[in-house]
Image (spheres, rainbow, N blue to C red):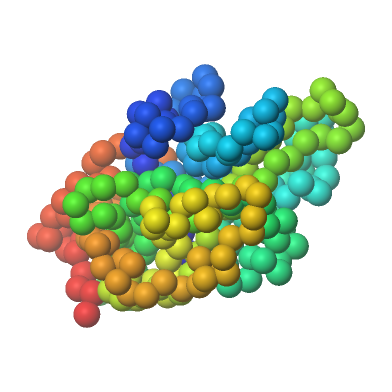
Length: 256
């Protein structure tokens, strides 16, 4: 699974790097070292201009709620959807047949940029109480990772044309491969740049093979390292969450 990650990406910088439109508006993004479900996150989509549908689709950087809200979700109060289970992950092998995700698989696929994601390994402690040790998975050379995602648009139908849209997304997960199996049996599904056009294409379904579990080579560039237990609480958020772990403090465990 992928339930926590870090991103220091500035939307304007990201848009320039990708030659994309920055549609995040005045959302005020700042580095987030402890992204959690329901947070606002950055995504990359490819869409047509509504005023010129005949023009080629272009890349756009958008802000979305992490935790997909299906379009058929009922309204709790004006402009607010009923609170349900936060759908922050979707199994890549089942998304196309799952009611909450199948429409998005057909025509609303996205990329979720991140510096890396967190996972926890549980180990018995000398006191007898299990301890959860956090690890951070990132690109070995410090580059940005792009994970496959799905997105949705929710509107309060009772408000008609005046209804504001709520964009939300989920990160696709797959079976862990390679060294990542030592940390968890699931991992976010990486989307290599050479497959972006096919994955983001709003006019055609994505090739089924893009939803398959990748070969171990696809994650051979992922570095796994222990990080401070500060990340265990979503209240903590800063670069210190990614600092080197003091082995003398007994926070580092072996992944053998």
